[in-house]
Length: 342
Image 1 (cartoon, rainbow, N blue to C red):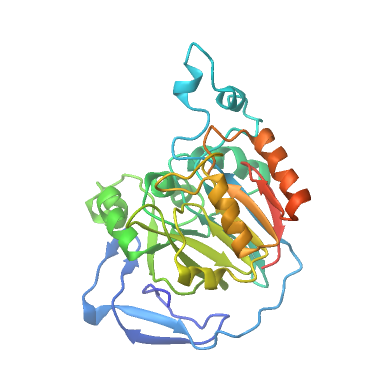
Image 2: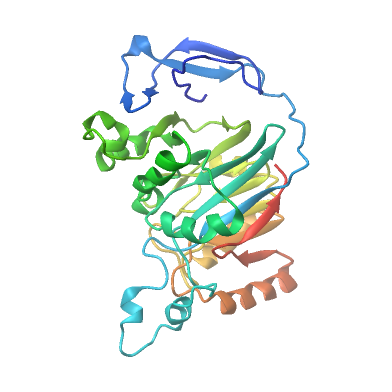
């Protein structure tokens, strides 16, 4: 189920009729976010989940806004090291080099019979820098929705920068987030959750928070299926499946029940932090390759690479695996565009 906000009018949606009932949720009005009592909250669900949507002529695509770690690449410590030992960071100092990586994030440019929608997955610390580089280049102006994978700074650290859009481009941005991560946002971004604390005249991001569960929900008529994974011991993160594309950016282990949601995956976008081993919170390349062999997608793009992952050298290694094993595995890079069918 997905959260329905209290709007001036409630209209039928393209996916079916809305069925309203009382349940826990949150309502948002412009300039203030209200957390209503149990008897004053709405949930909605689509009564017809099998309605086929006419496939649009315009092509959908995925744009990789960032493919790196939380601190990004290059690292300042590597650039200032007098020994100049880290060639990856030295190369990444060139804005056009594929070793230059910002926080992991993708933009789903989804085309359907209603138009084209820009659905962002995560807005981390480097989001605004990514937007400065890629939005003008690829003709992106609006952000129609944002889906949050988890509540670390590399996924939500850029929420404050969304003020540029909500003050100059559009009135608000819907945010889809798990309840546990929303509870974190209420502390880290309290002034965005409850804008009544903001001084009059101050410009802040206008966000509408939609609480999601670990079950399918719809964003602009695109079905999104959460893929629950572990991102370190006891810490839950979400990947997402849309169509036959599976995106898992922050993972240390995959629960057995999630493998069922990964069946018949055409494109897998998967966490691969470093070339030699995994960490407590991320897959390394060896473990990521093990998962590819188990999940058996048609194509895999790795993301979330640190400065030990040299794009050209690792790409050469992965090309050999295609010859030896027939698995199509590659590194993604910032600015990569992938046409997809959704």
